Length: 400
Image 1 (cartoon, rainbow, N blue to C red):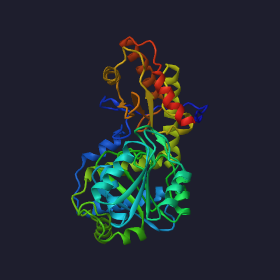
Image 2: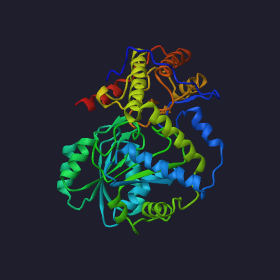
Image 3: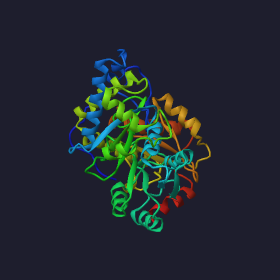
Image 4: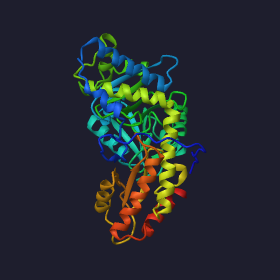
């Protein structure tokens, strides 16, 4: 596991002022009080001040992406992150196109399901719950099917917590003359996902992830040539990325009622992101959260699904203890009583749970998370957090 420790003492971040539990989830997540405070004012969606806020938001996100040449643009879209993913697929994949979906978890499966709804032809490389898609198998699929026009991949598959090898995949896709679309929902803003990191035609994320805003909109960062080519292609009025882009550039406004308070909160979240030191610093804090939490949980007897090389700084999957007294629902309730909301697992083969590393929290909080987990096990009468043998057998597949 990468060592992100430092000799200097890191001052703790402010705890939630309202006393609410920490959200150890991949978004919604714990936000700064000033982010919440930014939502106390009302804004007119057509007013010049709000149009300026929208413009500022778009420019700042392009700066994070590193669009130095002005080849890309940012299009915010109302709704959850899945709305923006569907908008990207329906706008950038031609109706006669064909998509190769790289799936290794619930969100890859959702991409395939979305394409089925859209009537877009697609094939899938399904790696199961957590195995990473690799360049050679992508190359083989592209060589075997010249009809494939686009490849879609999840950057961080939060159902397992794996960080997929995007540079390797991107290099393969473009070496074969195809186009890459990226769902970076839970990675953009903390994991390198800029134009200098790997090539893509479009990438999507949302307000309530690593920028640490609140839910209400997602955003599509796309090559302008792709935006122009998307005119008239979308299956949907409200999810038409080209129409939203064109209207915003002409009027400065959103086509339909925007989440004004969420935009205001996001601008404050962007300020804090910039003040912290941008993607590198945000990612370093999350990585430190992960390292401290994983080390403590392993010391307590828990086992991670993934080997260190695949652990993302976003969320970590742990195998549930094999002990007969362990029940996730009870464990969840005890953790919540201690101020921490964790996430149930999504693995199909073995029982698991997940602990998020993102949001307005730091290593001091993660040490408390570990202590809460230890105390909760003791209250349940669980004296060993060791997983069942089948869990370790499952994990060994990844090392093979």
